[in-house]
Image (cartoon, rainbow, N blue to C red; front, side, top):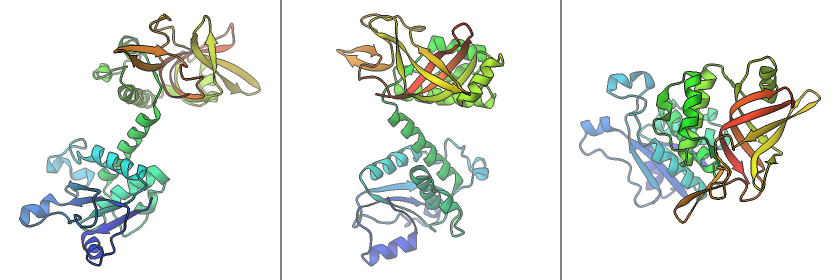
Amino acid sequence: MTVSIYSRPAIEQLIAEGRFPENTAVITFYDPAIKRIDKNYTHVDYSGVCRSVFYSELDDLDPEVLEAKGYTYDTYFPEADEIAMFIIKAYMNGKDIICQCEYGQSRSAGCAAAILEYFYQNGISVFADYHYYPNQVVYHKIYDVLERQKRYYDNKCYFAADAMILKKHIDQLQLPESLLADYQPENSHSAVDLRTELEMHLADRKLLYHTQEEIINALLNDKQPVYASFSASALFYLYFGWYPDGIGTHFRYGCETIPVYMYFNKYYYNTAEHRLPVHRSTIEGKNVYRLGSRGHFKSLSFLGKLSWDSKRKMIDAEPLFITNLEP
């Protein structure tokens, strides 16, 4: 996908000369400020050359002046979510993208930088070019939404503890109860959002561990239980009956291999109607939970509480969220 930045004069010249590129989507920003001065002012007319166009009427404002202009970070640029979905659709359809604003320097540059950074980790190329002055809010809001949509897309199978279980952890950690205000464990987007927020709070308080080495060091140094976020592959199932009760993996620590057991039956009973709540599906209007109903999982991303079992020399992992379960 090619991402280009244009000013209004440059794109209008391209259109007038009949050189508008095929298979291209356009994100065009135009100015409320100019519209208030010139009643005849409007956006660039793409009607004859492109069907896939997103129009955004947006003042070009820096973060430090938002409040003075009556905005907050949240209220400025409310179309960011829609533009991100427009970008993803264009990418999936194999289209190139043109980002255009009045001068082709700020809003369009911020938008292009976000697209390049998300898909190709090359957004810095726009910031490093002295021709551009990327709008920081446009960049961050579009990039953040693209990241969030990726988290949603990747999360086809997941486990999420119910609100009462999470409340106990939030209370013990003295985190804001407001975190659970809109939580719906049966909604995968809600589960992903809450996991992200919890990780941010834990990281801010330096209570979150990521690598195998730092997790084991913390456990062995009596900093337990600890909260950890990690990805794991080479998984195996834990059976104590006909259906699996959890998933296991191994951590490497020096020359040792330490088993890590993630049990789900700490929160739910393993019954015929409601088996282990990882893969959620609806049958005849009822939620049915199965672990590994689509085959053994290859990998996962874990967030939860870990404790060291000195007798068995293993790690007992209580999952709060297990996302990106890949069958």
